[in-house]
Length: 193
Image (cartoon, rainbow, N blue to C red; front, side, top):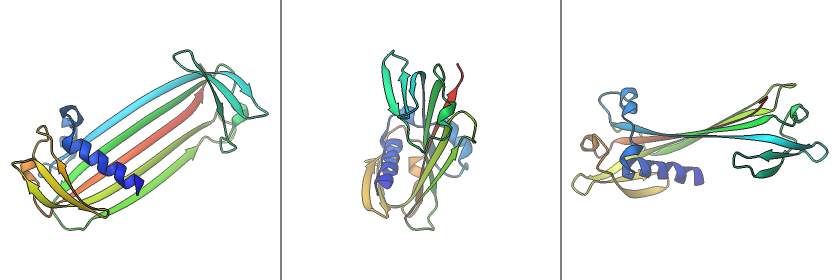
């Protein structure tokens, strides 16, 4: 339920957000006969390992602003013994929200999937985790003058304002399906400096 609300929030951001949220590049990926858009956010954090307490599975990381942050690593962190003082811990996060409008045909729905890949035994610790949530909403009503769209999901009906910067709004019709896909990826790796 919470994930569904997050994806609906992303839908609201894309349709009611600022002009910078709408990507012209997505138009090339979306068939020419349909409106669509994408938001991509990414960030990378690097910290240096300052201390290691192997008995308690603790590492102290020096952040980019100089602060020290102790972190306890669970038994799920494989290859803990490969971490050394001076190693860099790199966390890369990417989130994307894609919207695709299609002529009607299906009712509302939601699905989620997850995948996790850990570093092989003997390598520096690392993990990649990917979560994807897809929500299909049905356009119940549309007001082109007020620039609002009413959608029905498995959670109910909601009316959302649509930003002036959203192109091709006039092409969205009652009964169309709006598919919102949220993908979050987190990669954490330990590397030599």
